[in-house]
Amino acid sequence: MKKFLITFLLAFPALAMASGGAHLDRSPNDLTDKESLKRGAESFVKYCMGCHSAEYMRYNRIGKDLDMTDIEVANTLIFTRDSSGEQTKPGALMKISMSKKFAQSSFGTKIPDLTVIARARGADWLYTYLRTFYLDDSRPTGMNNRVFADVGMPHVLWKLQGLQKANFATEKDADGNERQVFRNMEIVKPGTMNVEEYDAFVTDLVNFLVYMGEPVQLERKSLGVYVLIFLFLFSLLAYALKKEYWKDIH
Image (cartoon, rainbow, N blue to C red; front, side, top):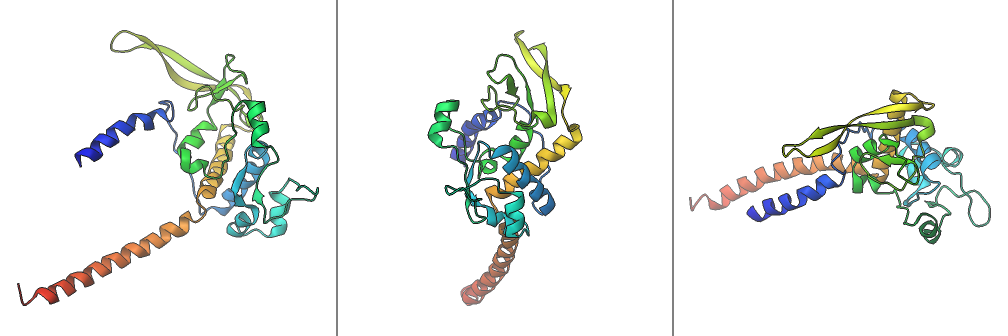
């Protein structure tokens, strides 16, 4: 137990630094809301797949889970073509045409695949990240982010959210040292959506990313309930059997 506590305390600072110390807002995910997942899937292919792939997911798997026919999948989710020039088939993996080599040479870094990004980062991190881009003239893209300091990705959703600036205040700590403390975000150029609409848009997108990271999550949790019930009943049976075996001794 002592070793476990030591390991946890050593790992805790790293977990805290994962978000740069920024507060993470709670992501209101609901994997049972298939309409939200459909909207999130459409947003993903429209705004994310220009650069990011999801090469461990197939289009028709999404269609099957979200009650969409292959025709609906082709019309709403597939906007790419294969090497022969024909529209990508619903059974294809969600890959993009941009090669990793081209991305490395053009952007100076590898562009991550987003299939399991929700499992790697967490839904709250993604929800906060997509809502906290702010103007920063010191950055090449002119933007920075509250939970991903000096982020290289541009704010591709700025036309929807608008442009916002981060307001900081100068405070002194217990030792008298001054530091910049984040206060709030302020919209300086409105987008096509208001704050509530944009939050709902991000909710759908993050909901889809969470689903994509583990499509069988609901089934796994449902099965887990039955497993626990079985283990409980089996424990009663095992205890009764133990009592029967040892009754002559005790």
